[in-house]
Image 1: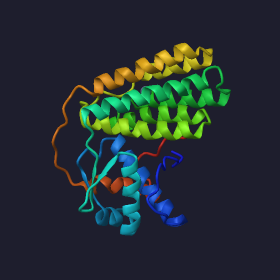
Image 2: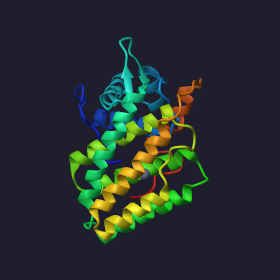
Image 3: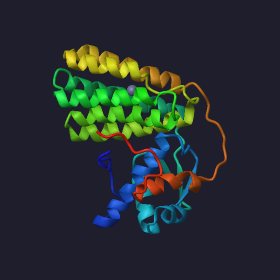
Length: 254
Ligand SMILES: [Zn+2]
């Protein structure tokens, strides 16, 4: 991710602090989309700072950013928690995502360069290969497919909004869906690419709507579950990767 999701900075930290806060944001977004972090999970700024090797101020700044993206609820007592969306917010988020991504495919139909087509095909192949493996990887790759498409439009505001809303949908999936029930169908990603290559914008928009509608429908059926886990343990591999050690499989090349 290009780290371009900043939507409303609470205060200025300066270059290095900003970078570190951005690193924490990316790690937590990813932990949410992979469902390692769940709605209601606590994110105390001191423990977070320690885990990522940054000051409380930087951790607080990162949490403020994630709060502005709707991924984290900031409470008065300074304990931030992963946001717990209502069913209505979840439905609204999917509706907005569908309209935004219709704009994406409308902008791309008939305009993909050969190297972009190759990149999209390679991404779908990686998604295919991840099937039957780790659920977290499948979900992340599925989300990244949509973000990649948005980036290919070259439209920065559209990219930023799709990025943000895709991660919010990741949170919705985490809140409401059953395991393995709500990933994108990889074959549908291929069909969308085919429609874009054919230059058929109406068909591409229809396919994208149906595709995301199906994800939403599968996602928004089931009530959230209660659980208790050690959150700083869960964040450990994300912090290690952020620090540059290859504790987890690397993201796919784009
Ligand atoms: Zn998809």
